[in-house]
Length: 487
Image (cartoon, rainbow, N blue to C red; front, top):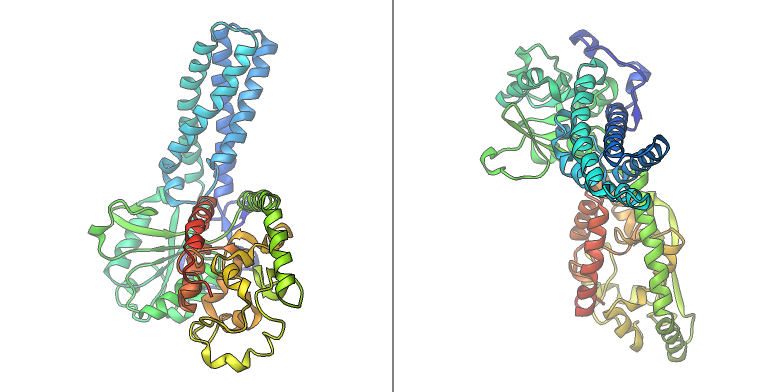
């Protein structure tokens, strides 16, 4: 849901839902940018008022007060962007804003310091009291302004989301009732799909087909959100439907079973006593992509400079031990299926590829997809040490600098391996650049099976965060030094 709404759309009747959607309606919508604009305007006004109160307490002139106010508003905008107070499309954030309150307080405590420093620089003896006044006045006004912004957008019918229910039993029926009564969430149930429409068929909500018809319903009925509510369909069929919904870039929520065990679960939204687990559409914002790329470039440059003497020594030893190039280049599959050549220190004799068929029967690790052999006879003596501690992969820092890889990401597979995993949800692992390290590296390395590797990568991509990258980087060091699972 990438683009802002150009205008409001009225709530559609059952007959409208049953008919085909117009091409313009098929564009996936997002209501969050509208709320974001209202909140940004309200925040600016609130911070400006707080700054003016602080300036009045300090006894500043008009010119000096204007400078201080401008600095505080600019600081708020910058810190707010960094702390993510305008990010996301979470149901709870849309309805109440409670999830963002801690970030608002952190932002306020952060931006007050440059304001205080500026007052001190102007020689104000009452800078402490002035900054405190700006803080205690501006912060409540920000929260109040955001509450008013939500009240405005909640009344705009064009910003309500069309919801498709998967299921037709008692829980699905309760869900329809609660969504219609809990209007602050802005969710309109406009249809349902299920193979056995026994209860919801009696409600004023149209049956849009069987579960297998879900992709078609998403395309033809302008669906913004899909909620899975205890359908009787089988496990595999439900998983395919969830993946189809996420691939269509619509929001997905699940009504979980075992309600009583869900206290404290993150991402849980309570709609009139009925819990929903929200699954975010996996995507990286420009800010996230920029932060990840900046971390990659800075860290790769620093490590290459730091390890330059070691890398040159290894290159010399490889050249002295056996004939052939120092670096081994191999074609791999990167982000969105793009091909690139990965760099590694050569760890095998020159005829290793020609002798691959000779040792195919020894492939006891690769599960028929990846080719891995314990004590591979094609590996040189020096390379056994390099591989054990993953030193042979350090030249991939060059791939990181070139933007072909990331420090952390899915495992970079050769073309044959990637083609074997190209079907269904396996392809999701290609949504991010492959990594020098990743969840597979810290969870067993070559001892990890193909299915485990794909599961690790999928989970990583679906729940990516910069904090998770840093966590994996720190976990990589002990995993590599232990020397287990490398062949």
